[in-house]
Length: 395
Image (cartoon, rainbow, N blue to C red; front, side, top):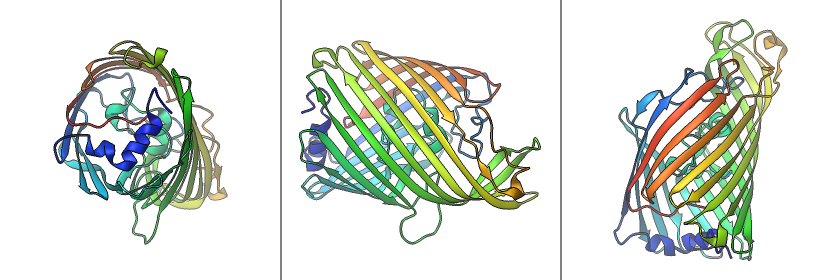
């Protein structure tokens, strides 16, 4: 099973604790990721995608930037538990907790329990740390709908079915602190995720994985600033209501003769559809009018990564967003833009070179048409360096 990419085997090893025990001779294992970027942009990166001004905008920074360094610590706690912490070192100063969780190593029967702070298991890219991305940045749909990644404080339970085909079921209950939710004082769960992943081998040269994800949370007085209105102003709005998202993902990999060190091709795509239903308070600093608001937004991307010779890869990605047509209550029908009549998109090409498994140099070009009448030709140079013990990346 999964002779090429080890999907099922890796999942079983992680759940048994074997991979954790053999990751390093030291206790705890320590790693440090160093990264930096040079960016040449034609437009102000603070300008959000058209129709998504009420969503977060984790844009780029121009010129030379240190980027976010990442420090990881992990170790077995005892025969039943293992702990992992990933700390993000902000170049401007300060430390934030990216991940800090405990997971079981001996539940058995294909079960694995994780609790603490972690990246959600929804979709395909969400669980991957930034240094494992195939491009400098996340797809537009991840930036607009998840503020690059959905992080959660809570619990996650996965079950790996005892089948020849890779079949994994998972569920999460959490605080709902990350967008599209809002961090608030509340007993019980503020957000939930359900997901299922299936995969298999096709001979010795191909493998695939497909997934379905469902996410639900609630926003309370979620603030959006500098939102354009029908009067040509930039205002501050508040949204309170329910948010529901469904997603599909598919990955296919091919390596001639099963040898991924020489050449391989990876194709992947994801699609998300989000509906938000509640009340919108328009222009809280001025008119402050509250009425009903419902919108369904969509986004997807497709990409291909080709390693054409050892240590060299190239990739192509296409992103697209749909801001949808909002249903706005009568009190705000003359204030809030309901139909932007524009679908943001972006095309990106990448080339990178990895002298070893611990270092990577990347060049990236993008034609960003995510903002109406503001086409942005983008150029990036990035380095990613890994120091210390570092576990294998997921499938």
